Length: 290
Image (tube, rainbow, N blue to C red):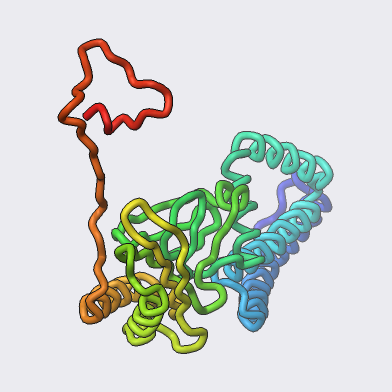
């Protein structure tokens, strides 16, 4: 074994102490790494048992892992004599600077955590968010992705979602479509209501309970206007409107109930045409000058 040089001998206690501290530091880092992985798995399994959203489960499990790793690093550098107070202060200052620089993104991030935690909607729900209606395909930490009936892909920042009204059309499991239909003046109202109700009840995907509603809503310019309100499962909301409209059209034709065109009645006075420069008096019908 080689002899230790004389100039090193006075520093041997410090070298041995540092080597011991370094070994302990490495041991702490290795142990902390394994503990953090174990904490990640344990937290993820526990959150899955609570039926939390997968994205939220992974995020919280990762946060638990990184918290253990941060504590491990601070404990390790403390063993080699580095003042941990200064390190913590430095990390805090860096965190504040990063937070100010990413203020907008952190707002979307915080909103994403709220959405994943409170779950106002989940994947495959049909929703209206920030004025856009579609099916939720992905709920991320920063943005939510919708797919519209036209197969458009809409990415909405989470901050814009939590700051506005959220409409979930499928949360209750059923939806009600509203279909407008007009029939000719002179039609029997009771007959029309019965024909419309039977047509809607027999259409595909329409629920028997609750039954379809039919209401006479207004005297239109060219027609007596009704609203037909069939109920369906949320996933059938779009196709049920097609089926009900087809059934209504066929049923009204079979019952010989007219569906009128829009009409405009124009009166023309052939005997007294207006002179050039004439103006209409108050209360005159503009069509009289035709």
